[in-house]
Length: 239
Image: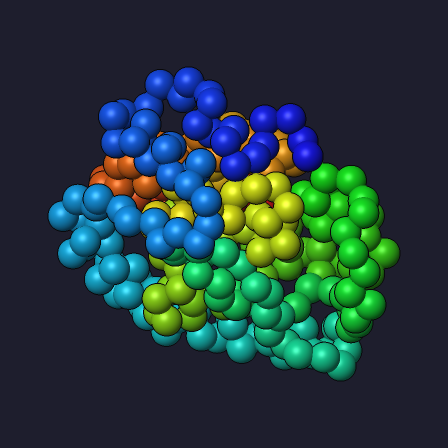
């Protein structure tokens, strides 16, 4: 297990977070099964979900031509197989859900279901040299266009527009944070980590402290700022 990652790792680091965040850190050491209970503010309880729902529906309507075009191109350029790729991720309160993405790899990417024995997951699964990628698939991933179907996840209530990015179930279990304060809020399409300088890191643990800080203080203005910054990040680096 990588240094600094584990069930107790966040609790053992002085994150210099608000009092609520320090309280949330204690949840890390709680043995599963645990239903994590947040103490959200007014925006988190009454404003965040309507905000997500309205923007996600508007986004799906406005982006419908682009979504249809990408769907056709996925079928034409990547051949037979599903247009939408589903993958199990850890959601709010540790609940498992299927995240939606446009397929960006050639068929049979994971048919063999071999156990994970390689190096750090983010280096392996996001390698630009993966031979199963095509130029079109790399473009989808680099531009984050493959993430657009997650607007449907937002409408369904599996995800939020802003929040900690949902991790693979197998990775979260292996690294010891299936039970973690980051799961007190719905996972997001984008979040604090994605607009921070740490986003270039390949380490899973790099943004855990940012996730804890976010769920400890969910407010409208920071969410709006993250959305705006995400736009600049996407257009600024093409991913």
